[in-house]
Amino acid sequence: MRRGASFVFAAALSVPVAATAGPWAREPGEIFLSYSVSASSDRAALNAAFAGGTLDTESYHSIYGEIGLGRRLTFGADIGRGDGSSLDQLFLRYTLSAPNDAIQFAVDGGVARRDTGAGDPRMMVRAGVAIGRGFGPEATEWVPLFRPEGGWMSLDASVLIDPETEDTIWQAEATLGVNLSDRFAGMFQLKAEEYPGDDMIVTASPSVLWRFAGETSLQVGGRFGLSNSDEIGLRIGLWREF
Image (cartoon, rainbow, N blue to C red; front, side, top):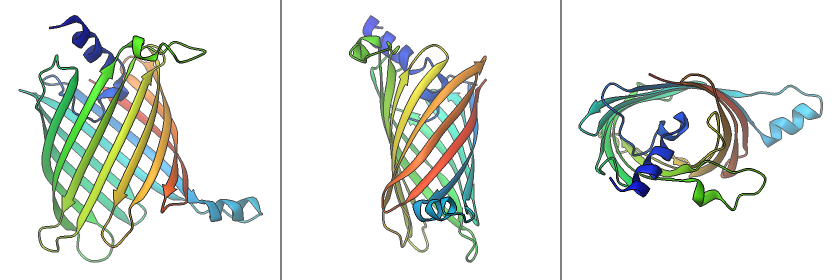
């Protein structure tokens, strides 16, 4: 393995946040689990609350898990519950890149179950792609005040299709992560989503992760609507690797 490629790959996996998604293959038997909860509202509701009214919020609960199967295969599950709706996904990801490649590329396929509360739940099929790259401290030497210890960047995109109705859900998420120390990391995510009958919405989610006990980390962050969304929200989560 080339020394540069080896260092970049290790930097991408040096904190748990780097491996929650993206193209990196997990080692056989390696498990990652996370649980997060978010509460959000829109700007009009926030203004009304500041004027003396009550604040109505929407909550969302998410459980995400991965397990390495070997031969560059990773099995994943993404279970989401909102107010009156749910979206559950199971997928199998295959990493096309060799472990020592600086740029990692993967494809995945699976199934999903969507329940909007109107009618029976619908089964959907999933297809996705992901690309990512880790980088070392030399790439962040220009950052003032502190010296980040490298990080990673990735782009994940997926499509869910209902075979009967041909309803389609498009999702794409870009992530930039920076290792601030061996216990802290900063992350910025930009996500675009388009659901049947709705315009595409774009949201930004900055967050900070703190590895406080072994392989367990706490995530605290926000979520802000940028396009076709006035959402403002907070998110907290726990991540664990085994």
